[in-house]
Amino acid sequence: MLTTHFLDEADLLCDRIAIMSAGKLACVGSPLFLKNRYGTGYTLTLARSSSNDGGGADSILQTVRKHLPGAKVTSDVGAELHVMLPTGGSSKFATLFKGTCWGFRSQ
Image (cartoon, rainbow, N blue to C red):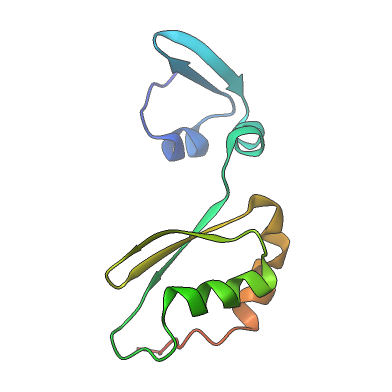
């Protein structure tokens, strides 16, 4: 038995996870079961530079929504943009990243 406040840690180390709330057992299941039942999706985090042309949140979201219509911005602070990608769209992630020019530079 392992106790932790970090679900990522439990996901890596455990076959079954029990979640407690207010001192009572709220849910038990495999990590996959819990993600499918209660997960909200994936988060795409982008760091924009000030010289990045077309790097506005609206244009980025429009590009992402061409592949994943359910995507939505969850945070747009400074140069960092967080976009929530729907769990059901994971099969389209490869085409999103292959077919999109994100302005990546090799270092």
